Amino acid sequence: MQRGTLLVKRESAKEDRDYLLDYKSIELTGLRREHVLGVPIDNLTRDEAVARILQMIEARKGPHHVFFADPIKLMRIRGKRLSFIQEQADLILADGAGLGWAAARLRSPLKERIPMIATIMDLVRLAHKQELTIYLLGSRMEYLERVFFNMQRSFPGVRIIGRQEGAFGREREALVKESLRKSAPDIIFLGMGFPEQEQWMRDNWQHLNSAVVVGVDDAFDILSGKEKKAPDYFQVRGLAWLWRTISRPLLVDRMFLMLAFFFLTLWRSFRLPRQ
Image (cartoon, rainbow, N blue to C red; front, side):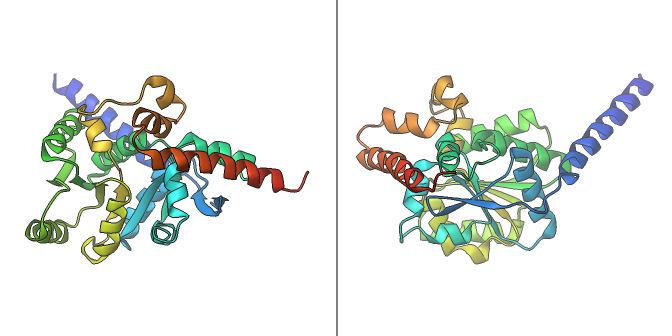
């Protein structure tokens, strides 16, 4: 029995080492950003994105901001009020498949779509293997508790050192900032919704230490199982953003932004010189 236990431990240690070496062996020099309708998008694979985040964590020169873009977000950060996100974000990742379509039309093709939920789980697994610390901030406490339970069940011992809901008054916010300062997490998953989470990040940059802060929108609600996900047809094709627009017709501004994105991409592509 003891020999079998030792063998399992050795195999587990080898698996952990190989998993980390996979990311550390990824070549990250020469990576580039493409511009889609004037907005920079990091042209990475999902593995390259995770490897780049690991590199930022290990450098301890943060805070760093990871932003997941889709067509509607892209149209909004083109505007003056939210243009700071383009400058603040260290990584801008193409979550929505519509960005891949637009980039291809504009002759700046992206390597692949980087889905937010899958990337979050990649980072949680990485944190578990590397003994990195995670802080969950945003959504409602009942959802966070469910997410915490699910992550602990899937990755026993993962170091989630804080979880705070996103709705708080001034006094509560001061306590959250102090908690972040004292705990100094490696990764903060910030789920206050776009663009509130990005604005909160900008206003509280000095309290984030060297963390990599990942804006996760409503991912906590989805990961908790409390909010219905988009149908598989939309999920597989990276069109969850489109499903949200269709399923919430009262959000007329989203529909206009989606149409503006589509027609602006076509207009820009028609104006490109023929090859």
